[in-house]
Image 1: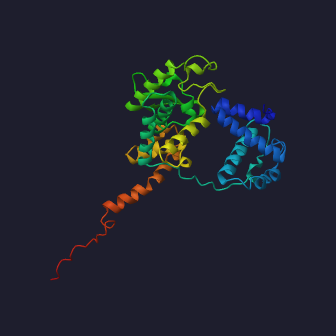
Image 2: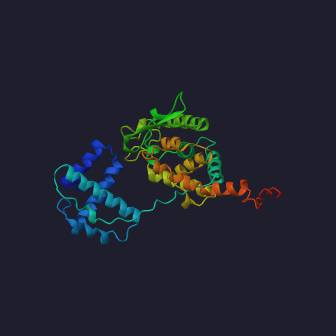
Image 3: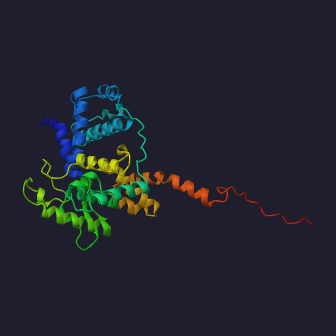
Length: 317
């Protein structure tokens, strides 16, 4: 069992949970970053700028994005200490400030998505429990753009009955509605019927697991993110796709990119993905750059190799 964090860090985490509604995974990440820094420089509440400057060397082998995340956690922590009156000064200016360039999301193409679905539908044709569960997960990851954590923790009550909308609890406990296609609804109905018929609601499950859409006998009571990752990679290998290119988040990226290609509005996409800041959603406009180049090459006169002839000047008199 992990040791309890120091009082100042514990108070900071409590503030994040109470005032910002931070999710459990977010709180765990902040706790790891702060306690890890404390292991290097000692009591964070008493650390000065010189001590914080030493973190640059300790983080030297980390990716810029990881350093930026850790430094951000530290800056927020010291801002909290000042707000609470526990410190008068802010030493966080001494923290490293790497330029973390947001990478373009990895996606798979339309043909690869089709191959995945053909393989999944073929395997689930006989309504075997495992293949049908995998198909249902695939439908929701690519068809509705869910995060892995959102998918595996879905309760049965979230599945639509009349309205074709799924109620999802995202980061920070924020609820949103996402559309569920007709074909996905049909697959979910098949899965629920099989789930209940094969004891998915009773026997061998932990307390509370019976209310989940994808229950499991594991400690969390539901299909784990790790197992979901494995199922997708195994399916991809059988479909002739490099397993290293597949993950739940890759399918979420494909959902967003393919919607944008189809003409979806960026604000609508932000709502569907559950992004708090539209700047996060805007990354998908860069992914679509190749399609824009192709459009120019196909539609613009210069792209087609034609030379624009200027109109003839009027004759001189």
